[in-house]
Image (cartoon, rainbow, N blue to C red; front, side, top):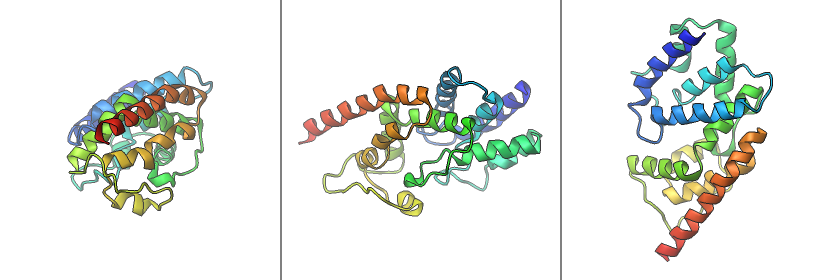
Length: 208
């Protein structure tokens, strides 16, 4: 299985490194490290499913879909993964997305680990950097004092409106601490969340 995972990594690295800095392979590498930290605290977890799911979890992201890129399922077929295991990986990936708060139900410990690992990379200092990297890549404003953060929205509404980067903190990032599933994910999220709160307070002080 180690060689299969390495093959998957080789394929996805060429795809992710065509994405902007918020979702490049460095993001995947950080999420993997987060997942490894969480796995150390959890019993009876299929590490192969976790690793493959981390590698593939952003391949089908609507923000980056391209006809020239293979889908996650196509990659799983290319690496000749067993159909049952491939199905488990796809179910794990499906449970990761925030989608405006319309996420799918967690169905396994592997799904909980990958979701928490990904969300940890969306908050804290790296989360701040990624938010502004993505906003810059998409031509979004740094902040908009007149913009009101939405508290309820459909997945389509969440993806379609080009909000200012700071608004994104209030619509998603500040919510993630309380949406963590694993005990280790919850523990790691606290410090990162508090750092974001401090950053936003300092930012407000500087622009008022």
